[in-house]
Every structure is written in structure tokens, then in C-alpha cells.
Length: 234
Image (cartoon, rainbow, N blue to C red; front, side, top):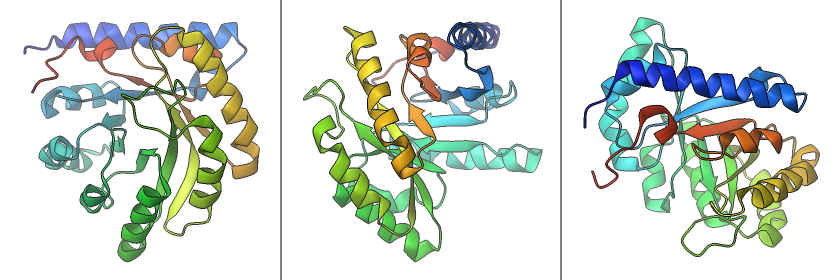
């Protein structure tokens, strides 16, 4: 697939403008919402172009794909750029060891078992990993995430583990009735944020990021809306 850098630039300008409009509408500062470039199937050289436009946060869904790009991302450090990588896809416990040294956050923690393995690996490496607990807000069998009524127990367990730092919540709401689920997720975040010192609510993607801002999202994950439609069979 060919990528148009001019189109990507225009897309990013439009995304930033839309977020600013929504923030103004709901009394929020535009800088309170961070834009993540979701880079599934996107070549490293295209991702590097986005870094040059002021986006220093990317989201990777697949461990193997991320590892294949990792060296290209690392090379930017010598150019004065320090890209941050969040892992946002479903993560198997046997793959945790491959990413704990290089990613800055894991957004898809949905079980004590996974959190415990992240804790174990990070303690062995002498570091602390920021994590988000993923909530399956729509109860969809096709998606990962903890059920809302089980979230309290998970948060308590995760907050007590060493080697990880609980920063907040992540969700992927059903595309239908998105506003309803975004609103519910915003309420759940408010319920637990103060208790656990949370400061990140990661929700909103290419199709609903503007609405997510209304319900308190602090981080929107944009892939197709930034890079265009991609071949997900790669």
C-alpha cells in the first residue's frame, strides 16, 4: 500500500482541530487529550514521518510486528526524538517478556494473571511498568477486557502488585450506540479515579474520538483516521 504524506498531514491537522473544538465545547483544555497514532500494519518509515509532526506516542497491537519495527523506532533517539510506545492489543502472558524492556505502557491488562506476569518480568528487570486495565464495556464476546462488575476486584489486585503502576482504564466500545457506552465508561472512570490515583482514560478511536472527548477521554487512539484504510491481513 502507498501512503500519501500530504494526506496524513492533513488528517492530523483535522484531528487536532476537531479535538480542540470538542474541548472548547465541554470546557476542557486541548492539551488534556493526547493523540496516539495506532500503527498496526503501518511501515516504520511512515510512522517516523508522523513523529516529525509532533506525535511522539504510538500504539502497537501485535508483539511480533512491534519487535520488527523496534530498531527503526529506537534509531530516532539519536535524532533527538524519544518516541513512546504503548502496547494496546491483546497480550498473552508468554509474550510479556518480549516487550517489558521497551514499551512505556501496557493498556490491555484484563486479568490478575497477566498483571502478575508483567509485575514479575518488570521486577526482574528493575523497572516499573505503567498499565491500564481494559474494560469490556459492551460485554462483547469478540473483545478482550474485564467485565465492568468485576473491575473493582481487578483494580485492587493490580494496585497491590510491585513492578507495575496502575494509571487508568482503557476500552473499545461497541460501534453501535457508542455514546451510551462512552458515557458509561466515563462514569466508571470517575468512580475509581480518585481512589487509585488514575490520570489516564484511553477511549475513542477513528470513528468516535470526538465523542470520547465529551465523556472524559484523556487519550484517543487514531489509526485509520490518520493513515487511511489499511490492509489488516498483512
